[in-house]
Length: 193
Image (cartoon, rainbow, N blue to C red):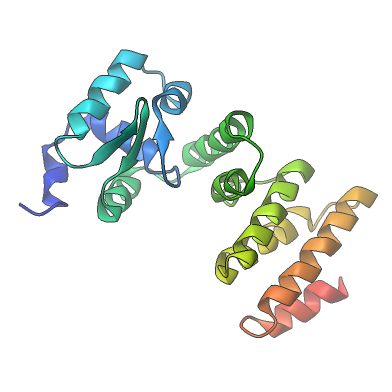
């Protein structure tokens, strides 16, 4: 039986839980799922422990899991309805990670994964710029450009001094990261604004 056909053998509850877990980039914890769902800790633990022998997830450490195969994560993500509820879930996930993770490069990129799906305030845009910088340092230009572009989109209609400074910073970084590869007409327009 292929990995993907195994998905038909799961309960709706497990599918919903793993759908939420699939929105995390990398590892996820029982604590995070507890905060994001209306389930009890024991319910979450039972569902995850049932998912382990099925090969969907693996236990990394006590209370910490990750998807064993990228195609499972992708399949559960596709099963998750992507609408306003998912956007709110991404916002809650970003807030949770900002609160839970220690301040480092991993936090910036983990949080940015969720901030790319929501409308951001000034502080969230700072995290997106930090994540863009991390991506560029690690030669992941595409992801860096996405972060800077999201800042430009979210701050485009705001006009406070602090917002303008951040917008200009994002525009310059967007320009530097994308000059050779991306839409030069858009880059020129952003720099002229």
